[in-house]
Amino acid sequence: MTLQLRDVRKTYGRGVVALNGVSARFEAGSFTAVMGPSGSGKSTLLHCAAGLDRADSGEIILAGASLTGLGETALTLLRRDRVGFVFQAFNLVPSLTAAQNVALPARLAGRKPSRSELAAALAAVGLQARGEHYPSELSGGEQQRVAIARALLTRPAVLFADEPTGALDSQTSREVLTLLRKLVDDEGQTLIIITHDPVAAGYADRKVQMADGVIAC
Image (cartoon, one colour):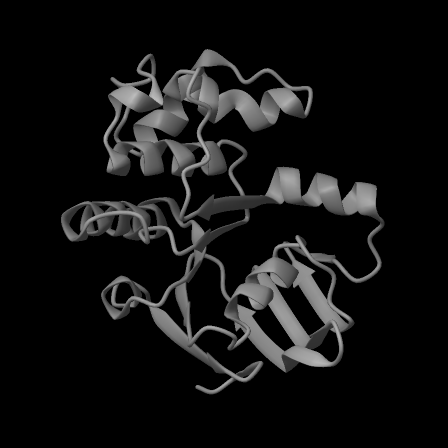
């Protein structure tokens, strides 16, 4: 078991309940799609589970560590070393090559990845020959693959993806989803995606439907 939530609650502003006692388990090497309408709580679930936001109550255990009692420094280190993030926006720096973009978070954290580490991360997403290309020289699907390689560099316990194909056309979306599926099947990567797209959810082992801050099914 890589991630567990126990009775997690989160309220914003003046009593807007985003999570209302959510409990869930995400097993190692599994691919889960979290679905639901806007305002259902799915993005808040991701943010709290990944340590990007603090739950008001309940417990979240990620890779054996309880997020509840961690200070900000320890939480930052856990996110850096054990969690990967992929978003709808690729968030690549235009002036950096693909390989430099993959290395950037590690370098900002004070660590210089080796050439072999960068090559392995790019190879994992099928871009071993594109490391010296700039984002403007890459297709949208290739840019998202660079973002995935960047997230995989630290070999995260959990890879979270928030609408990872939302900015891509249908063919490119299928290519990226096939890649994510392969990472789970071949590398044992634990993957949780937030999506509105039933086609994207169809690549997952399990679908979690959220509504009004709770898991409906």
